Image 1: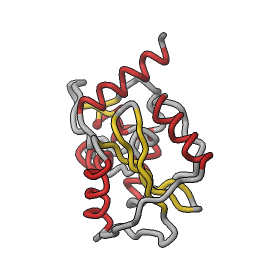
Image 2: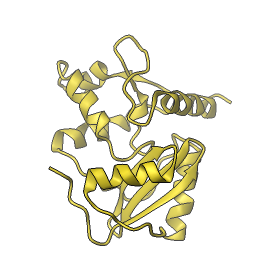
Image 3: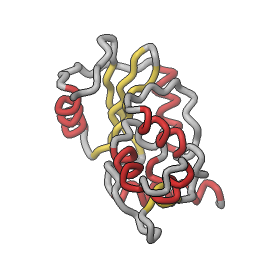
Length: 172
C-alpha cells in the first residue's frame, strides 16, 4: 500500500553537501527529505513510491533556507514541522533516533532495548530503512551490533560522511 499524498504537496530538489535532495512539503510540514545523486533518480524514486508525477515546485524561501542550513550542518535540529507517514511503531523508532547525540552511534539492538523491546533489532532496522526524512530524523546514527556501518537507504558513503561531519562539529 502506498502512502497517501496530500493534494497540496510541493516537491522540490535542492543541492546539498551530500549530493542532491528531494523535499516534499505541504502547509502541514515536511513530509519527505530524500538524498540521491541526481534529480532524475530522485524523481523516479518518488513516482515509484507515491505513484504521483508531482511536478517540481518551489518551496517557500524560508523553508529553503532552513533546509539548506540543516543539510549543510547535520545534527542541527530542524525547526520545520515534520509530518512523516509511518506506523505507530515506526513513529516510536523515529522519535527515539533523536535521543542519539549528533556524531554518536547506537546499535539497532541497543535502540530496540531503549524502546523496551530488546528482541526487536530487525524491526528497528526496518523502521530506520523506511524513514522518509533523511538527516532530519537521524537514522544514520544507527549501526550494526558490531559497531560497523550498515544499512543506510541513501548509501554507506553518505552515512559515513554524515557521522564524520557531526563528530567534527562536536569536536572541532
